[in-house]
Length: 407
Image (cartoon, rainbow, N blue to C red; front, top):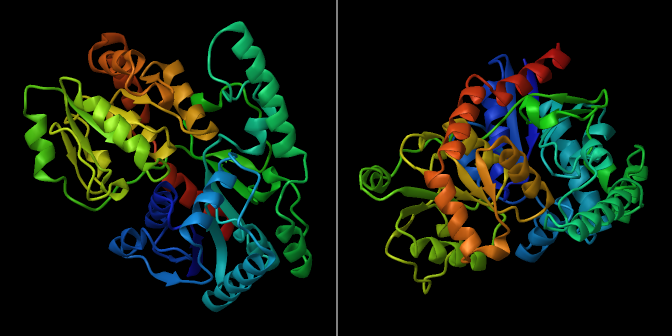
């Protein structure tokens, strides 16, 4: 039996659930163990029957937000001090030794990229294609500047070129990673792209999302991985599904903001629809939403197919893939380059309509919601994508890759 150590960022919902799906798919001959520094979604790990080791040092709320912005390419500043990186690498190396782990699976826990290599253990990284080195290197327009006009497209090409240089060439990795890498006898990580490149980079995409790209030898497509929460749907969902008004699912993941949640929920409350919104974790007691917006805790969204008519999503890969797999057409509001990429690929496929988050509450937003509810072309495309997703299981494919290397 081999131990496989999972190191997600435990305040990132999509990353945590992605790891759970991989761990569940491992052959029983292997023993998964989870570790983490922040514990927001540890109940999901434990509910799946997986062992968890709580570790220190942890981040403050402000440090979490700064780390998320750095990981998503929205900032060159990071909370990674030399002391924190040194301590986390030491903790992770000790856990690898104590558990006898023969493989490490990471999300965006950046210190894993040092600790696994320092221990000589192969590092596996199930990851969306957006904002990987090959995607940034080969994409002419990242959508950093919105708009379809000639000047907007030209400005986006310039912005993309600048971003490409900063991401793949400029020595912008926090100095702490170079220092601690040398202390642990591994090659220093100098660029943002090198911070997020493992021994085995497993792309959680459908094949058409990689059309036109050349993948390096250390990249491999495995397919979609999204959450399958072990929880029943609350009764309100089926009650709303039976009502004559269309039912819209509002899913904004763990990387949106309270302000956007309030603005979007209130905009949907002005439309002739009912809304189910698992956004309780964003709200304060004094927040008041329209009576047609029904707030819940996290839902098993993979069970919403046939119950909701459309969705409004932030563009995170997990929420997008869940909508695709269940045949739900959606309005996508990418909040950063990776999410914009996911939305744009679905808009090109026809099962989504892209809207800037700045347009929430405008006629553009209302028109987009009307389209995903009533346009037969969009709804037919959503049904076709659902059929294409049938049988795709990136969690199982990732597990097979890990097992192949363990063997």
